[in-house]
Length: 228
Image (tube, rainbow, N blue to C red; front, side, top):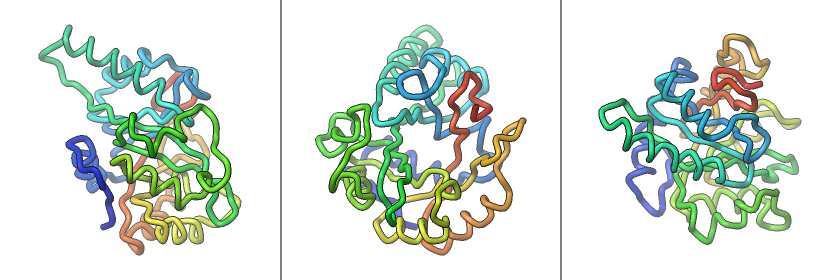
């Protein structure tokens, strides 16, 4: 299984261990690796998001606002304060995260970055609140930058693009992607559950290319258990 952490850290190593066991039951009540706050196109304040995460009983999560980590930093500060006030409570693990637009096979795709060092120079161009252009917009360079910052790169919702996920995952794997968002609710069902056909196909592709599977609700609304 390909899992890059070029600048090995405890956070990245822990995430690799978690990703190895993600399945269709992992989201949305055990882990959630795709969600947005008011710092990009979501409606949740970071504090409200963390309150929900704790109430749900999440073991771990990542806030993936588009091209910035403002929500992650605010949530991290809130969580540190909460831990100090609740020292004996179960505490979810919060990884750094962001969602980056990139060009793959002449299609715009979204690449999720996790467990990277936020202050690393390689990731900074992608944290300016807007999509990059030029060579930095190419998926191969986005993936390389995430790895240089010590993180892991995942292709978000691979069956949502104009180009087939069969083609996109093959190309992303060639560029060194670490994983794919296998468990995703494409039709936004209530309650949230992964779309069975796409999930099965993406899992098989992940197996074929030695990638790990991830999951997330891609929350944009006020409920972490739904996409919208």
